[in-house]
Image (spheres, helix red, strand yellow):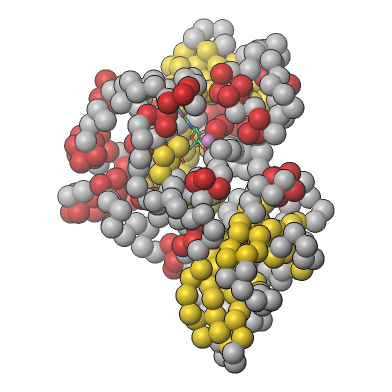
Length: 424
Ligand SMILES: Nc1nc2c(c(=O)[nH]1)N[C@H]1C(S)=C(S)[C@@H](COP(=O)(O)O)O[C@H]1N2
Ligand SMILES: [Mo]
């Protein structure tokens, strides 16, 4: 890292943190003062630090801390009178969570999704997954004030991030999932937080008349350590139509703090509902391209993981890299009631673009799918929805759990991609 996190705060962030967070002028001084008092940035928060201590307060009311007692929503308590015994691991659980490993493009941090619950919907930032660590070749001190090159206009131009920061505002809670999320990562390349950012529409407005309706967004992507076995190719950029970018934003803050270095400080792209590989970190390029533009190396690298047919040569032939509706269990608990074993299945529904009530689950390929009463019901696609289901296992043995959602596209679910096995 070019700057230690601590120095980074002192020299770069403290004066402008409020701007990254989309705060008003009046709050600016107070926030800077608060940071000064702490003597540390939220960026300094280690794994033990409490991050976003009030996310529960923000979300608890909406989603109901105590389901039974929530007057607004009567959700059945399938565990009434039962006693909790133990959390049951999924077969093959082996990953160490919340610890960065490897270097550069291969740098990873896995989120422990078993900690997701109705009252813990957002991922604390030290637990938020990382795919590619902060590039050691990015000398931030030499790149501030941060510039974004704009190409393809009549004359090349530079946008200075500082000039855009007053346009930053809260953009809501969104999940981010790596298209390479997998069982090997215990599906821990999936997290959710509240973002602050600059709507791309506002950036376009700054640029005036746009030359084309297709744009490449790129970021710094140079590391001294090459990716093992060429697993990840250099070059981070994606080509979108302007239409596909409606709702997308240049994120400057996450979880109520400026972006961390590893998550793309000072600015990264977030395309709600699209895979993480399109959400370019350390964003430094906006390039308007024409309809014949070739696909970028990043689009080629991620073609199979973003549901493309083959590897299209031209950017215009790529399907949107959008997450289909998905669902999976994230925590299994063994309970006991009157000599009977019950399994409380806590799961998440995420991705997709429609609100659905059509979730079902099965416990073995030879078993039928049974409906899941998602309660409180799903209200949107931006953030995951937590569901609960009580399963009465037929006896000891192994079971493969799969979810299904009827009526919408669920390619990964159909392939068994998110199947999770349990042994009782
Ligand atoms: N510059 C750059 N941006 C990048 C990447 C990268 O390697 N370099 N990886 C992408 C991938 S594959 C994912 S899944 C997301 C991960 O974002 P996160 O590390 O903040 O979770 O960043 C994306 N943006
Ligand atoms: Mo990814």
